[in-house]
Length: 199
Image (cartoon, rainbow, N blue to C red):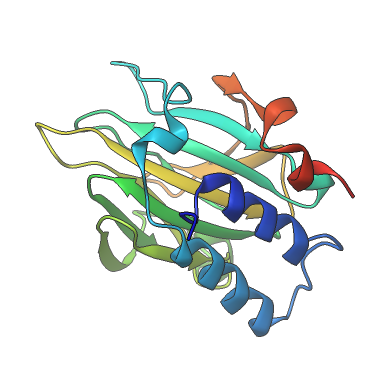
């Protein structure tokens, strides 16, 4: 039996999300998590799509999902982390492909407090190889990163619906800043096999 590889996973995601994300669909959330969990990380699948930087974590776009989602690989060098940020009206799914990443969940000061101040942490989470996580703004804001001092980490992210900008939040003041979402590499035109991309 052929191995369930990254292309097969992308094909199943395209089928599941061919009409976009049904906002309140718990069944769809579970289906996407099941598809991403079915795939067992294999570095050969994403060889050549990694990009590492000593200055910041990097984002590589794999698939634009016919406008219904973005699928990307993020590479986290040792000690790198994201700012605290939101996912505007979007579902965020994350799978660990290599190493270990942490997630810090925070209250949204724009919802929970009339007066800005230091960001309030709700929960700490850790994800290891092949773990799959899901978050929306209803759960809170989050920060993701790699605390290891010896090994880089790689994660796979799906955002549906996709968004072109998000808000990052200052740790000490809770002040938000709108920031554009960019990519360090774009492989979306060669996302997968022809059978995956055909409608």
